[in-house]
Image 1 (cartoon, helix red, strand yellow):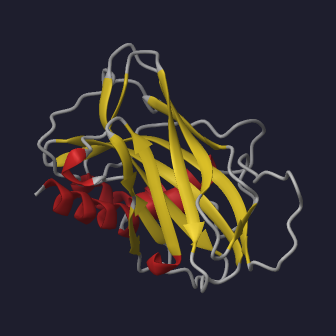
Image 2 (cartoon, rainbow, N blue to C red; image 1 turned 120 degrees about the horizontal axis):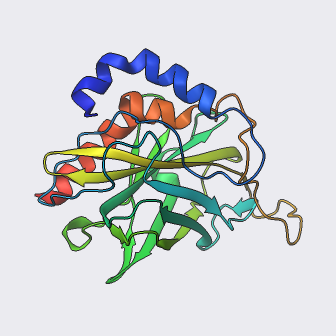
Image 3 (cartoon, rainbow, N blue to C red; image 1 turned 90 degrees about the horizontal axis):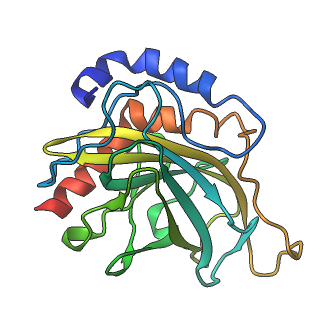
Length: 247
């Protein structure tokens, strides 16, 4: 399904995804029915799966991130695992992460984010949505055509994230949508969510050895973040960022 149709079904999509993101046991692996797609122009003509399955072709999970980020500190590492559940190669995969903070005071200038991919380390493009979310697009400019995962294969993306000295402190949740560029449009092919952490000042105490919660989503403002992302603002922001990168 394309975004042109998806925008007419915003209410249905939001309700379905809020139900889909209700707390469940175990790791957060992307799955579910066919979902609306963002408009992501590209020179790539990618395909993924047979288009008949109701499940996402790419399973995804955020893992390994710290529970606390210190303002003004260096990059901290977390990982995005991608698993191809089909018997065909999936190409041109671009993650889009939405950060939602409880106070809605985070701005793009407060974050620095990068990811590793074949060919090097690339910066993540950050924009502010009209819902006071931070939209992080793994575009990488013209040098990054997107991730490729072979049939039945898996790939781990290393991500670095840090917060500026003047970043607001508080709790943040990160959810991700996986988008596959396809000509002048795109497909929503996976999702991952529930990475919950806090941003604290440099003098704030940190519980040694603790890791962030990356399982079921527990916050009202975090639940359904991918729904909001896909329903309009977030993925459109990502589309504009990828469109500029493709030129």
